[in-house]
Length: 588
Image 1 (tube, rainbow, N blue to C red):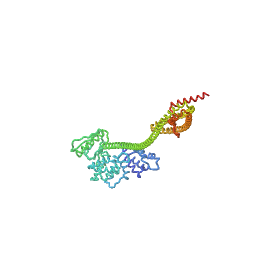
Image 2 (spheres, helix red, strand yellow; image 1 turned 90 degrees about the horizontal axis):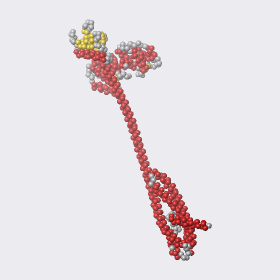
Image 3 (cartoon, helix red, strand yellow; image 1 turned 180 degrees about the vertical axis):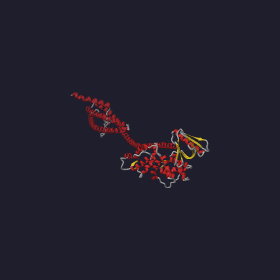
Image 4 (cartoon, rainbow, N blue to C red; image 1 turned 135 degrees about the horizontal axis):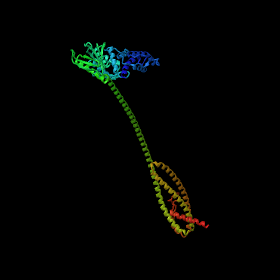
């Protein structure tokens, strides 16, 4: 997948260069040209029929990147062999895209150097599209470039640039990176040749995987003479050329896990000797000084160690580690942001819940206050009504007590008069025959009165019972008060009905009193005719007047009234009246 991405990045540059209006689509004719060039430079048999067949349903308009990618994978990338020159491939893609995107204004570097920076960008850029190089990789490249130029890295200058970059986009495109290096932003004080040599050295290291390069003397195998050659150390070989322009290659020393490198003692007037021993032959090499000799030995030993361990070159491992670390940090950042969003959402939900609870509490407090106000108002009204009812009951009770006291006094006086009158009747009974008949009539009237008084007593008992019920109703709870009020109204109506009956009884009693007056008149007439008792009757005239039922004017009749009797007297008189009533019936 890594090798495929290395090929896809230059192709992406070429494809986007063909997309002139930046719509994400390229015409079929242009894709045919691109595909043909790719097949040519990558040494793949070109099949134009397959391209036509792949896009046969899209003849009208341009073809999108999504439409071209399946064809590119199936008919080109899947057929790639490691038998082509990658630099020719890169130059072909560079030629397509540089014509449109490279701005040469104020650049201090050549097109060749710009091409090398473009290749370095493709190597260091992130594996996602559109391609961009992040701040960390920009710093890595600029540090390498500064070291290759022999300069010192100025951390503060890059920090200022990184701050400026973070405000914009935190990454650069290939053309922005070329402009950054080409305008000498980080190579001030260096001439163009030094800058070009630095770019070339970094290009050789990162793109061509050249660990070390330089002039050294090599001993020939046939003539055994020493010749100066330009050596390039790669992970699996040491190539040597006539000069540093790499125009004429003289040979390769192929490295594997069985090779070794060792230092040699001085001989033949040559110092700083070492040799590389391979399975088929050995190569004697002479460095210019001890320092370079040691550097070359260490570099070759590192390549042999990597071959034995089966590892890739260090800068590629370092790049992959940096990418993995960035992906891990990005994943952690995304997870942290997700957790922060979840916490924020939970916090907002909690805030909404608290706000809703606060509103509910405020509404509940308002409702409770309103209910308490209504309850207090109702309680106050009920207390006022209860107080007024108590006051009315108290006044009624006081009036009834006054009436009872008055009637009790009248009853005592009346009882005294009755006793005196009865005594007088006993004395007159034997002498007065006419008075006897009159007394019988009087007894009849009295029994009638007794019956009326008995009915009156029953009604009075009912009134007392109603009064007791009313007093009990006063002590009932607030909840039953309404019901008791209705009951009291009904009882009040019953009391009024009873009062009407009492008035009726009073009228009947009044009639009985009138009859009684007639009887008394007859008794007085009989007494006048009885000469023997004339003096005694005259003597007791005042007493007889005292036992009168009361004033002859209209008055209320109650069970304490003028014609009242005790229960014992009433029962005796009732018995006597019944006996007298039965005698005439027997005589008949």
